[in-house]
Length: 501
Image 1: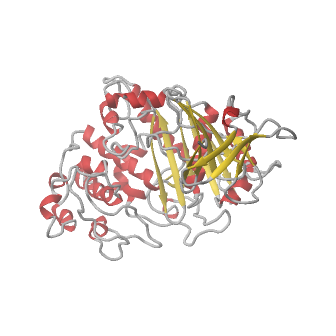
Image 2 (image 1 turned 90 degrees about the vertical axis):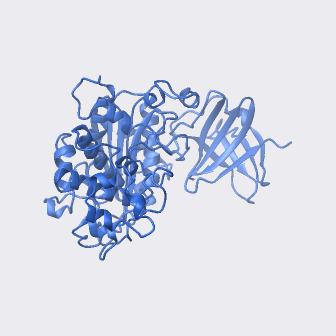
Image 3 (image 1 turned 135 degrees about the horizontal axis):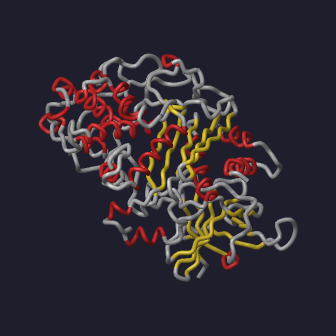
């Protein structure tokens, strides 16, 4: 069974025991289309599931993954010696544009912001997300930075000390867009086409509206699987922060190019010099390098995710050994987190794009299922967080040893449950959960998860999903102490249960 057939099978089984179509899952979850590409040892394959007629050639908004294009254009200029990551806004931003960022009490600080601060989200500049425009956006980036009408965001200005705190900033990337235009003397769209899109053969990628680019096959945003938003997409002038249209296959060309550069020796001719790619993928703060998410613990992958209003979400992930960021060896914590993971696959990754505001939970579950099905490590570019609750895998065999958790369990907040084994019928031998704190609930079947829990050398974890629900049930054995953990996939709420004393 191919990985795409496997994913379709998982989707089809989540809400019904009958053989339904995977589109039924998308309809139930309110997602019009999911476009998937998988990079497997350098080869890309793609698949699309759509309730509205989209296909693998349909372009989607790349949302904040657009920032990766800006970072690569910046690094290509650095590689060419046109400026450095330590160049300040005083060095590389036109004085009249810099003036638009100033307030009376912060103007002496602005010039100290470096290009690296912009790329690592440590500039101290405001404006988190970029909403886009129902109609034509402002013509000048400088008007957006100043917050001048019709800009939909206020002035981009300093609110924190440069280099002190990590604070995600679409405003900072819009400043970077102005920097790149000033340094190169070219408009941003021409520059990124020359430095990134054309060299990487990203032939399906562009900025501006699909219509102005002669593209008819583009994904409209949907509120549900069948209710299209109006307007069907937003326009952007903030191209560096959120303006790219592309396909999953094109984004994996970018991911693959970075993997190739990482493997090359210093003298090899690759898209970008190895030293610069390593700098891009070295964590500086809160799991981020130069734009990219690339947690050094466990240091197994890198990537970026994003969402655009009114309804696009996406993620792109590439696997790579990032231990160069910690001196060539994983940290002790990183080694512990890697201990029970599969080996890092060579030139592998995936990209998932949706046209739904609810697509983030779907791409997280699909990403976990891809790694699970391909025998790849967990997605860990943000570190050890345990999102998502995976799909239930109704074809899987119950893990060995689960019966050690049979019995009564209580939490500190006074909730109680029982773990039981079904002794007869079609589910004979399967684990069930009885939640005692809500009267008259039926016993709930626990289904093996289509994903791996985060484990360590000292910790054994068996992961189940409550049938039909977005609740993960973790059977934990840490150094001989057994616990049961329930986690809600939407809110990330957690309740931990222990044996009654």
